[in-house]
Length: 138
Image 1 (cartoon, rainbow, N blue to C red):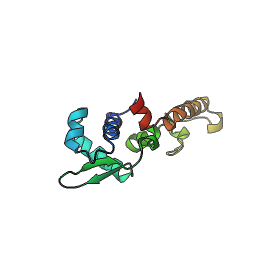
Image 2 (tube, helix red, strand yellow):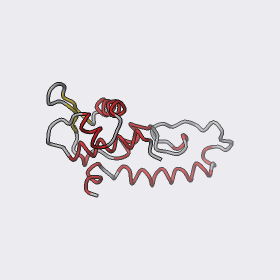
Image 3 (cartoon, one colour):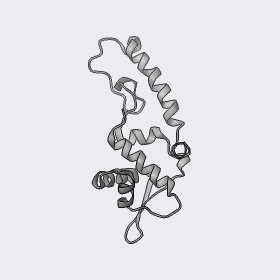
């Protein structure tokens, strides 16, 4: 399940993409339009700025704007940024691998792990091939 933080991030990105080319968008505008708590949105936008998805301008006429074309922002990158691993088990994560503490089987023989690898791979196919542009076009 997507966290509230992730859902708010997608709502904010969709708003910014819809207003792409119109200049920086104020946090207040985004928060009001998408019903996102201002302080929570502020932290989310700052995190996305630090990760290189957004730029910002201070002062009058300032706000946030997309640095990348919406077609270059995929769902997997945003989910990982906001929530971390996409995989259901730490032992199948590509970017956050950890050995499962409670596993009694060698990894190569763990049927749960083998199943979750398939789930991860299929999920990643969808998430990595779905962009912010796709969200706008639906």
